Image (cartoon, rainbow, N blue to C red; front, side, top):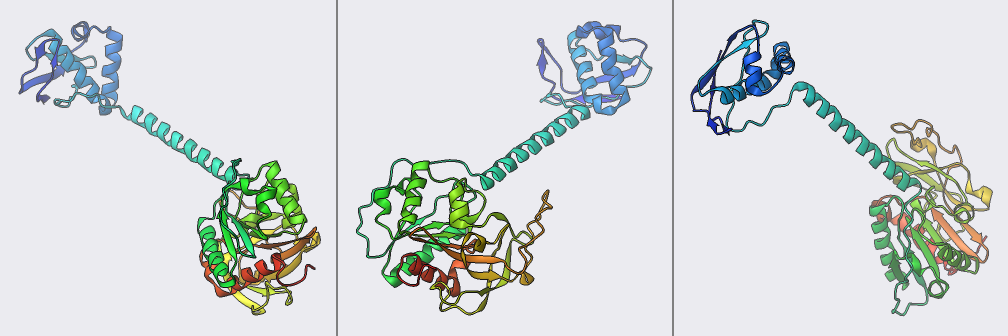
Length: 389
């Protein structure tokens, strides 16, 4: 078989000329070739036998033959195979980068797949840990507050160390700013947890946890917020502020009062019917007895009324699928049954607290009914309207 060698590179001072041919025919041993290449017979024989077993090794054998020719002579020579089988070679060009065998390619492919799988597993693990527990990042220097607040001042706190509901947070900020203008309230926005100190908290009537997730406060900052609420401050928590990512027992058991299980997954965002149970609370006034709302729906292990909460709205489970099952999770295919609370309030010490499981999406805050609810909730939490029952 003839194989034209085009533009063979220079090795050991010998240059292969364009148009030369390497001819492979029949032979009984490899001694000459072995000596020429500085290899022992057994090693060279293994190369040849591999080549004979599969043409995937032909490039390697061709390169061996070419090297031998360059070291032995400046004339074509016959490479005679051990098993009297004619060997087929391929042509080499200017770049003689050795081609990988299929075995090596397969090994590298499997290695690559393994690395990708490990990276995906690590990424998924980090994401799950962040969603469930959050990464503790705290601030120690409080923000400078130079503005003069109006008679009713609201602190909108939007920090997240866990999962971040970006659209929901931005939607709430826009909604609260508009409610502030409408009612002549001051709205102060920050993600700096160091603002939770007695001096600065005293400037506000209401603190809003705007989709806050994860452990966002130090022990001293937690103590300042707890004291603020118990001594008459208003507090509101929205959506993600009631999930399982908050490593603060007092907050979960006393403020939220319901242990989070999961949210809807099939699909995540669904339209459902919610209806109010309380017609006297400022957050339920100006709202119909039943209304359709599209959101991500939370499911809790227990009803917050067991912890003394005043349930304001429930969601009708017959109008949506409450299952939280997904890939690798098959034990969340349940809801809360006929009583599925989604909005409630509670008096804690001298303070007033309010929780809404709504508000995953930006669109939720653009609906008129939800804005009416949030407006009434701020009025109640600030002590402007309604009683603390």
